[in-house]
Image (cartoon, rainbow, N blue to C red; front, side, top):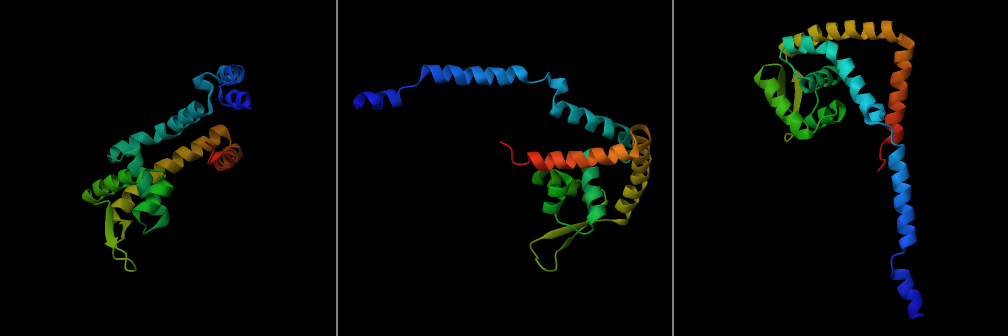
Length: 172
């Protein structure tokens, strides 16, 4: 019986080799990076954002700042947690961005009447004007995307990307 116990606790060199071989097969099957989902999505993101950068630079707005301003514009009065979640940003980044936008007079802060510990943010009149101006350029670019790729194809692609995101959420 002792022999069985020692056999069970001893590493099985055959199964280790098989596991390593399986891992090697998986690695060999990976596409080159530029053909990977991650690379294609990053490249697409860059292509999507590139035409908007000149207008953002004109107003000295970074891409993360623009995301925060867009979320505030879309949602109205909101808190930093909501901005981080919807804007796909880390909370410390949102804190820094809000400070910068407030210093520039693009947002205003107020204390939540229901929870005095919580701050809410809204666009200032100046911030609303900046969003309105940049949004005109973004709409122009979006129409161009639809013209070049096809409005229905673009809509279908967005639906598929949302479905992919939902399907792979939580994969480890």
